[in-house]
Length: 172
Picture 1 (cartoon, rainbow, N blue to C red):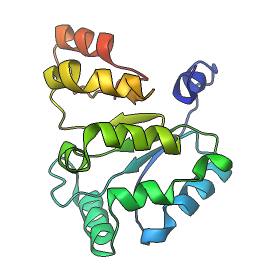
Picture 2 (cartoon, one colour):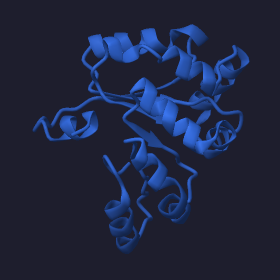
Picture 3 (cartoon, rainbow, N blue to C red):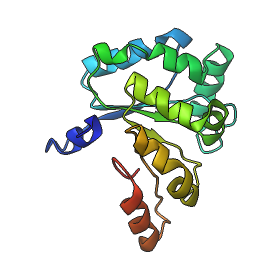
């Protein structure tokens, strides 16, 4: 059982999940931010991968991504910063980011690095569901990563059922 599954099966109903953009407020602050959030009672952390065109995000996250990129945050640096995070951090960690920078890194290389540093799950908002099923889910599963899919209030019941059946971890 992975950390996400353990958390949701704990029976607690008052879970706190926090999102922050990697590299904010400083490029070297990501690991310290994670440790501080865990010390202060956060149950699950979503770490945003900064991207130059965060089309589905609001102005605050767009500004955070722009600042992080301007100060040198990259996906490679994020993985380097998280290299020893599992020495002392026990809560589930999820990376959330757009498909383009992940593909530039290489999807299998991305999954391998996630597994190496102890990432539990991945949310890729612009990953088409059909592509996820055929191309991405098998690789993520090979590396023990939960692929967390998204639904909206407009998502049909039929599609929710299909996404739910194919999602690992939880629906977002």
